[in-house]
Length: 394
Image 1 (spheres, helix red, strand yellow):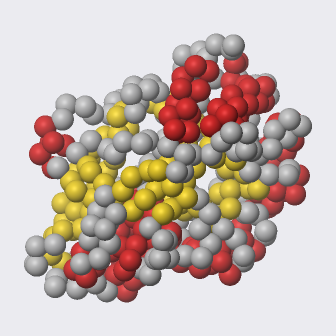
Image 2: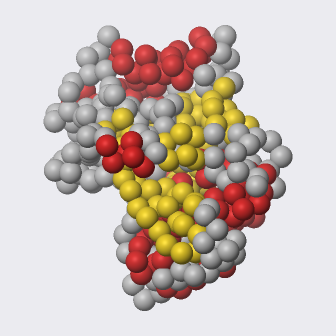
C-alpha cells in the first residue's frame, strides 16, 4: 500500500448559540472545522482533523510511503520542518496527516482504531464543556441540563473576567448537575484561556474556593510559563490543567520538571502519535492525561489504550456539518463503535453545497488574544466583554 495524495476541505460546526471564552466570542456560533483526507493506491482514504498550513511541504515527507508505518512517518514529518520548526499551525498539519494515517492503518487491518491500539473498553469517560461565556443564565442552565440528560456529571465552564460572575455561573451549573446526580457532588472546572497574571490567578481562584470545590483550573497563565504555573499550583487547592496549546514534547518537559501541571492536556488537532507520546511522558510522572477538542474522535480511540486517561472533553453533542461518527454518548461517556478506522464518514457534497461559512472578517473571537489580557485592573462589567451581549443576573 502506498500514499498517493491528499485533499483538504473545511466544514463548520453550527452551535446554534454564541460560543467563546474570555478572549472573545463567535456570536453566530458558526466555527470552522478543517479536515485532511489522505488517499492510497488501494482505495482506502484516511481522515484527519487539523489545519492545512504548509501542507505541500509536510506531505512531501510521506508521499509514496506505506501509510502503515505511522510513527516512523510522523518523525519524518517532524524532520521535514526542521529548519523553520514545527510549532504552531504547522504542528497541526502534521497532526492531521498523522491522524489520517492511523485511520488508514486501522481500516487496512479491518479494526476500529481503539482495538488496533490495544484498547479493552470502548467507553471513554467524558466531561461537559459548553464554550459558554457568552450565554445568559437561562441559556447556561438549559445547555447543561442537556448534558446532564446524557449522564454528564462534570463540567468545565469558561470564565476569568469577574470573580462574582464566575462564582454565580459555576453555582448554577453545580446545582444542575447535583440535581441530575441525585445529590452527588459534581466535578467543576474553570477554563480561563491564559488571561491572568500569576497573582490574579491565585487571588481569583482562592476567592472562588471559599464557596466552591474546583477540580481544576485550566490555563491560568501563559502556556509556556512553567514557573508561573507552579506558583499558581502551590497557591490554590484545585489542580492546574494545561497543555492543549503545547506543540511537541520539548514544550511539555520544562512544565513537568517544574511540577507546574497536575492534569496534562493535549488537543486533538496535534494528532494521535503526539497524544500517545505525551501520555507516556505524563505517566512517567504519575500524572493523568485529558484530551481536548470539539471532535476528539481520534484521541478517544487512543485514550482507551493508555493507563492514565482521566476524562475527555465533550463539547457539542452533534457532529460538524457533513460528518457522521460511529460513536454515541450515554451515561457520561463516549461509546466508540466497531467501524474500521476512526469511524468517520464524510459527505463532501454536503459540505460543498452548504452556504454556512464562518465570518472571515470577524475581528473578535476566542482565537484572538485581546489587547489587555493579563493587564486588567478591574473586572470586566458583568463578567462579559461590552462588545458581547450582556448576561442578566437572576
